[in-house]
Image 1 (tube, rainbow, N blue to C red):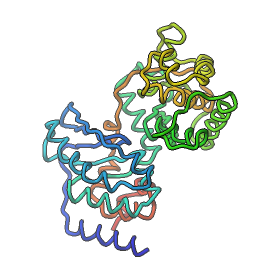
Image 2 (cartoon, helix red, strand yellow; image 1 turned 135 degrees about the vertical axis):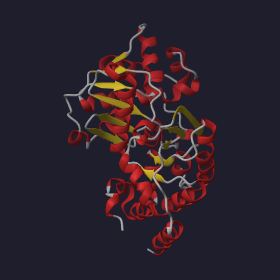
Image 3 (cartoon, rainbow, N blue to C red; image 1 turned 120 degrees about the vertical axis):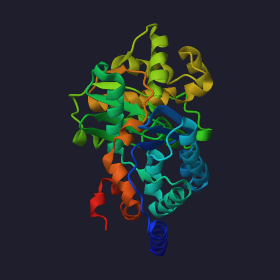
Length: 357
């Protein structure tokens, strides 16, 4: 409690007397598990820098070591992209930042207050369901009428979203996070020293059982059995799909559930070197291939989708962030937001900024 009170006192001291005004344009920062992308309503340009947020969290160190490079990125990226200096700025923190809030919300509040003080950019922790809406919003903007399915599935590094126009489902099931879970269960090793393959038949069955257990909340938020899916992220578009095409001697832009399951059965007992040779992958790419296939297979079974369409998109959360009036309203009540974040975690975003004193 003393630590919480000290953090909140620092917040109020930091923002007391501030007279922020709403600018004519907006700049947003998509802060994912492996880096930051910047975009603006005043420009078609984007800029990006890589920062690994997941590794220090998984190692139990929190985000303290990432604060300085984050501040530098928030200062430098708009200048590199040529954005106007007077745009209202906002950072959206996603999977890694949600994990940080769950681990120690008070420590995270202190980091965010420092980031705001040194860069001028307020950063919000965006809930998973809202990230799903951003994903569908962005996919619809990029694909237009070519998006023929009711939902998209976006497998990132730390999280996974299945989203449609009315919302969706999100979980800490990204490519790296799921690989970590499998390694801890089947190998009892951290991901940096884990070689998942080969798997015995029993281990493969355990992996599938573990995957099937990841979706208990799905039926409450999605119309299971009445969905169609488009996969939009690189673990599928540049990982699973081309590997399946090579294994089957085809050139398709869709993934059939039966073909995916057959490929898993074929690859599970192979070494990484053998997997790479059979699928055209290099050794590093092959590391995550089987685990991503298992995750996609499980998602298809959980949603009732017999196949998945695949669309190559350079999708970010920037369009959704830039259009998010609630998020930008919080930039005018940021001390109140941090106060709520310290006690409510990521749910602070969904509260009403107008109720702040």
